[in-house]
Image (cartoon, rainbow, N blue to C red; front, side, top):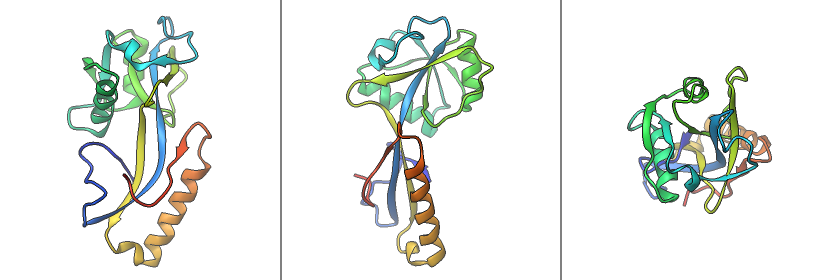
Length: 169
């Protein structure tokens, strides 16, 4: 499974078959005392002036956050780098910035932060797909694994949107 980003080969790449699995919405993580903490939803553009915590340059998480912010009309002011949700959450809880995390990311309840769903069109999401070498799905074990992964994606939280079809567009 991979997260689709601008660095992911396009669905037309003849080397791979891509099977979209789900769109995992991104949530904003802010300190518990932050002005956004009490809101039901927030527009990502409302967070344009905040300090941001993102993954290291070149990582899927970095691509995801920068693309989401760019789509919302701003470039994030990157204050800190953290590749693990736990590290980022600790930084957020101590007021070093805010961050985006996928809805499926589980955060330790120890940190005093608030998870605020995003609203607006398009709502940023991590798009997860299964990618195999072209033709490898003819192998029974590979096809069984793909079937199981697809079924599992369908059973996830109703807040996560299943993707349809077998090609990422």
